[in-house]
Structures are given as C-alpha cells and as structure tokens.
Image (cartoon, rainbow, N blue to C red):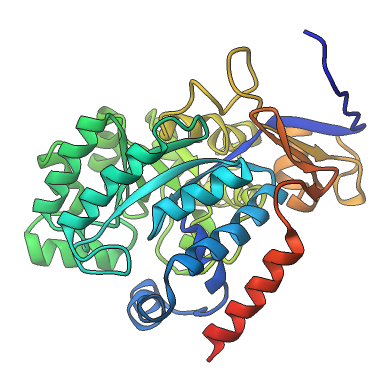
Length: 390
C-alpha cells in the first residue's frame, strides 16, 4: 500500500472517531430556547408546541446540517439519531459523508412525520429499504419512550425490528416521575414491562437510565442491554445520575451521548467524556471510578458496539473503516502532557480537534470543514432563529 497523501500533525493524538450514541440532531435549531425547566415542563410546555408549529422537512434538513457541522468540528464521526423525518437526516448525513445510525421514530400520537403507529411503521420500512445499501448508514427503531408508545405498538416494533435484524433505541427510566407515573398507570416499572415483553436484550439501547435498582442493574447485565449515558443533559434537566460505575462493574456495555442541543446545550463529546468521568467518580465516591481510558472506550468502541456496527468502526484496527480523529495536545491548557489519554479527557477541548476522517475521507482538514459550507449553515440558522423567536 502506498499512501496518496501524508498528513503531519506534531504533538497530536490520533484516536478512533467519536461515536455519539444519542442525539436529536435537528433540535440544534432549538438550542437555548427552553432552559432551566424540568423535563416534563420542557417537553409539554415548550418543545412539543414549538415542534407542532415549526418542524417540517426544511427544519430537519437545516437543523441536521447545523448539528453535523458542530459534531464534525468536535471530532465526532458517527451519531445515532432520534427525530422526525429520518429520511431527511439520512440524506443529509449521506451528502456530508458522515456515518449515521438513523432512528426510525415511533410515537403513538400524530406528528408532522406520521399520523399513528401504522404510518410510523410503514414509513420505517420505506426508509430502511431506501438506505439499505449505503455503507455509512445503519438503522435502529426509535420508539420514543414507554410513556409515549403503548405496549401494543412496542410489540409491533419488536416484531419488525426482529424481522429486519436491527436494534431498538429508546428513552427509559429517565426521571423518577416517569417511573412513578408508569407504576401508577400500569402497576409495574418500565423495565419490568420491557422484560415481560422480551425486549430487554442485546439489541436494546436504553437511553438515560438514571433510575435503577440493584435488581435492575443485575437484570440489564444478564440481558446484555446497552446503555447510552447522557450526563450533561441529565444534570441540566435534573433528571438524575445514572450509576455508571456499578453498571460497568457488572459488565454492562455503556456508551456516551450528548442528547440534543436543546437540552444540553451542545454536541460536545470531549466535554461529555470529562463530565462522565467526574460525575462517575462523585456518584461512586471513588476517585478511581471511570478512568480516562474507560470513558474513551465509552465514546468510541462501546458506542459502536451499542449500535451494532463495531465490525466497521469504533477502534483503529485492520479491517475497519478509517474513522479517525486528530486532537492537538500542544496548547497551553493541554501542556505539559504526561499521560495522553488523561490529557485528552481532563484537559483537551473540542477546539483542539484539527482533523476528522470518515471511511478515509477528510471531513475536517486542519480545522476547516470540507463537505459543509459553514457560512451557509450559519445564515440558515439565523433565519430559523428569527422565525422561532416570534
């Protein structure tokens, strides 16, 4: 093999591209629109009414471009999305040449994307078929949560996911209120319902999971459930603190996600790694919990595994795609460097990312986006800022 190009980056660290396992990409256009409120009020009083009024294909297209530009500049090479118009999200990701796991959204009530379960599921099949041959695009079913999707619909999701041999990506046990409401309505906790339905397995990616008993932690380990940890969103919405150290100790595969920029308020996986490490130590009352190497695995190989694509990406090794991120370690805030992994997690920031490659193609070259017109994205974003501000 003879390289066509050689890239020199002194005093830099090459890592596997970061894998963001939980996003609502298009919601980047709602960044900062409903801050400092609890999750239930955030959804019911702010986000859902705004979505009903403004969300359409143009919103999803422009919001996804904004999110992908931000993620690429922060070293992210793959994202797992859950939002309306998944076909548009997949189209934008394909145009930009970014790796994506597209969530085939399912909710019981009508939205701009579908009128009810029948249409959600039929459209899911169409989107799946449309991108089945694209090597950068994979799919997961994305029923929103146990409180927005009935048991009957979840059973249909499980059947169709099994037929297509794809995973299921869902918010579960995000808040104590969610769990209490489910008990009052159904006489059991959400995880108990999913266990009874046979949905707790290695194809499930459970997002948030801040409310877990000892028995539930053991059950998740036994059933090989994957968990997407979103520490900054959980902190900002005061949803709770997931017992990540205990989950990892039990052998659960835990990955990292930013959640959407409307609740975070950024799509910064380097920042998420640092928060996860610090929060994990505080929750465990153990300074050795969640060391730098562990959180880097959460942000790379664990994420690829949770999306069912660890045969393609998530680590730098022969036979996988060249999804690679380069991070400078020569700036004041990262100097001196004794342990590169510790410097990456505790000192470096996304502004230190210089280069990003997906499948060997440069998406960021010496700090400049190569497949996105950053100025055009900002102009469209300002237009949406004016619209939503009204």
